[in-house]
Length: 198
Image (cartoon, rainbow, N blue to C red; front, side, top):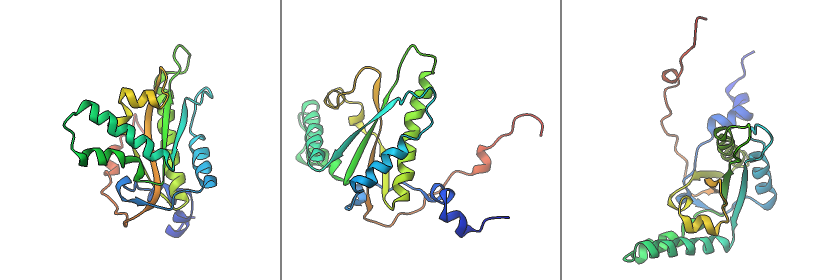
């Protein structure tokens, strides 16, 4: 029996087929409660994980900590761009204030083990996607971005990243301040090939 569109929309497939990113620039309160955030993180941690390595971890930015990391970003810009305008510095100070909650997903690759590094990195990506879907399931919008500060040595040091660790993404989570617009999706048929003879 073919499920109706309403049946599909009510379930997991509906979440996957309707999930879309909400811009971090267009988020507002409320964000997830502590219980809701824990559920989002738990969903992230259910990602495929060859070897049960948990090759990722989370860093949470909530409350005043968002302004604290923003000041670090502004300081980094001021060090590298001595003529940076006050507008630019204000932009950096406000980056983490765009959403009520920001979660850094840190990929941590273990070397010299049988599990390929590529699979460990992909696992961290799957964590990020699970978090997006879990946020959507609870009525929030989420945006998975990196931007320049994911790669800046001083920021990485302040976040406590160790050798083999890098930011897979910052997941901004909140309520959309504007209606979400559907974007054009790739033509599915153009992406499909079949191997061998049917």
